Length: 322
Image (cartoon, rainbow, N blue to C red; front, side):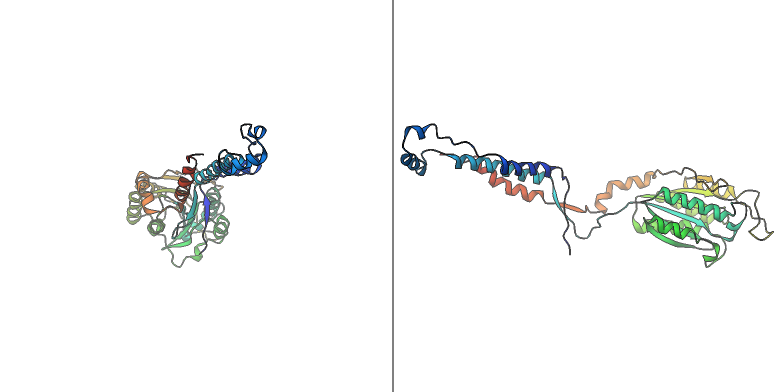
């Protein structure tokens, strides 16, 4: 297994480098023997040095070198060298967004531009680009709900998937938004995310008591829900067919958003999106207190070992000079 080493406060390394350069570049201290070399012969002066009766460059130079070494080690410790902990991810995004899109046959009604589904695809592209870098999952639903893309930060891959969305890819017909809401709750729970947002794009078909109950459950779990409606109350027939007339149920989507404590907005004819709420609910915020109990820190500081090395070296500065 590869060991990864980093410095949590790397700017202190600059000061440590200055200390090392000072030790290398500063000139040695000037010869100081209190004038003895003018008063005694050279052989006698050498003998006095040998008997440690007086100090020359060596002792003073070693004291300066020790001080610079201690300063460099101190700066190295303040830079906080750290090792990556075993069993933790280097990165974990605790914020997630789920985009759930209605792929029931009613989305082929022609009161969009040119259909409700095309209008929803424009909205999906806009939302994906706006959330670039965030963990985003895609859900498609009709008679049941399916994960089209798990949580990922690959915006380009998700955009490519949007292009092939159609009712034909769904195994079952019908419209069950309740299934999409419950599947989104499962995705959030499996990832352990703290900030959780769900955007449901639908024309309101299939919103029943089960869907309202699922929306209420999301509110209790701290999931922020925004409902984006497509279609018109006047309705329109499916593409290439004169009947039946498919009406968007705005009242149903309003009830659904209200049960989750969220917002409901309708797309304009060009599919432009509206500003969606992005605040996490209070129940999700309360989990922040236990964040460090659930997710271990990724880096383990090793600075304490340098502190143990500094102690004996620091004692040498207080030694008695003869």
